[in-house]
Amino acid sequence: MSTISNYLYNIGKYGIFMKRVFSKPEKWGMYKRQFFIEVDSLAIGSLGIVAFISIFMGAVITLQSAFGFESPWIPLYAVGVASRDTIILELSPTIISLILAGKVGSSIASEMGTMRVTEQLDALEIMGVNSAAYMTLPKILACTIMFPFLITISMFLAILGGWIFGVLSGAVSSYEYIYGITHNFKVFNVYYSLIKSFIFAFLISSVSSFYGYYTKGGAVEVAQSSTKAVVYISVLILVFNYILTQLLLV
Figure (cartoon, helix red, strand yellow):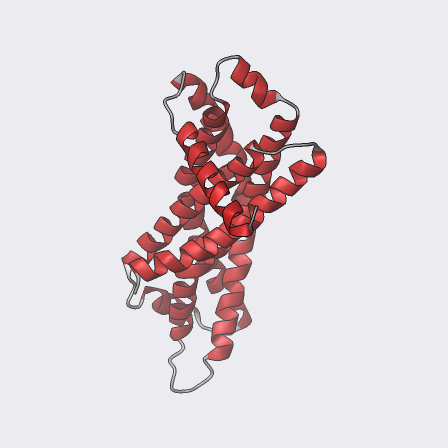
């Protein structure tokens, strides 16, 4: 099978998988319990790494902006403006999503792959449960609902980190930084960021579930499925990042 044919085959297979995932559940209560389990595991469990990376990335962006704006013709508050726009438009929605693709995506693909090779998914099918929907739909809902909140927290912490380390290092004054992050602020940029995070969350949860669900073999194949999921999710995030930017900002 050629590479193009293989891609088209997987796209069609993914479409059929999504149709199964969004079919009518057998029992809503069962899905509700699974949803809260996934929220705790995938979203709340990622809060620590998101917070840590956001604070220090915000600090680095602020220091780099201050270093680049050494011209006397550029006002110092431009450091705050540049940091704010970089954080809101790209750092929080895109970079954090790529990090979550590695953490959450690999976790989902490994979990689903392990359940497949140990025949747990087959056992669900024998009991009359739609295994694709039961294992995937709560993950998709948990990610698409909670990831925008994680991205919002990331924005706040990154800007806060930029302010703290920018002031402590002497790169920018507190007044200039705060004035910069409020100067000519566009609320639509936040909406744009949240739209991206919602779509990226769907890609992370659905693509990783797809590769994990169709794993064949043993432990080695589970690891391969996890790697493939992270690679393809990362590529899709970058592609959709361009498409969404073209549609929403240009």
